[in-house]
Image (tube, rainbow, N blue to C red):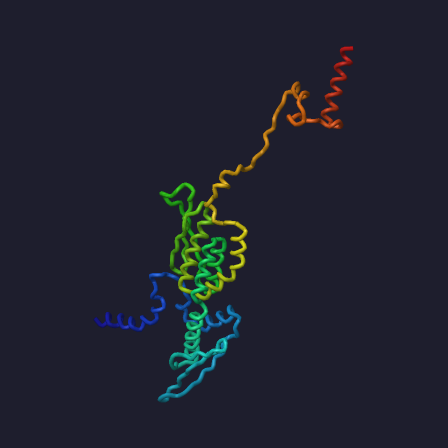
Length: 284
């Protein structure tokens, strides 16, 4: 029984730590699980063209115990650690956490969220590269893709791909080729992360805005499988057939009827005229 109590003891303390990951019903990889908020805050300032965070840590003795409380300044605002800490390092991390959570909430508003989702819905051409860049910046393992030929789908939709990213699996819509299927799976993952209003993902998507708009406005659609009726009816590789005419009929045809005019200096024409001269010479 003592063992059971000891095992259950850490559970109350673990609840606050697991609270950021509580939206497990909406699986997504977020940097909140990482403890190095100083790094996250520094990356945020770099992405938003802000000065690097400046920390000011004060110490005081309480009952012969040294305690630290830290304040960090970012973008002209100051954020203080939520409580005192026994180590200077922990106090600075706490101040960075407070600043990071507040700044992230301010940065991503509803308009930014809608705009980013709209860009991703316009096409899938950049979804794999966006997910790759997000993995690099958040120091998460790179996504792994798998594709299959599912049963019971129409002949045009041959591939369905899934992507495993940060412990979550995302499955995209069917596509006519493996490459597009993987892009669609990546789009599901990107949209899932955008739904959490993740600052890093929003920054990456916005950095691709001009490229996405340019491709969309040019009419270039990377999502193969949707073929317009106009394109289906248009002839492809149309070649004018060659019309062969007997030699006896060729003399009576005009140029418009398909007769071939042989230039005077053509070697073949000279060979024919020479042969006719020899035949006439023999008859004589």
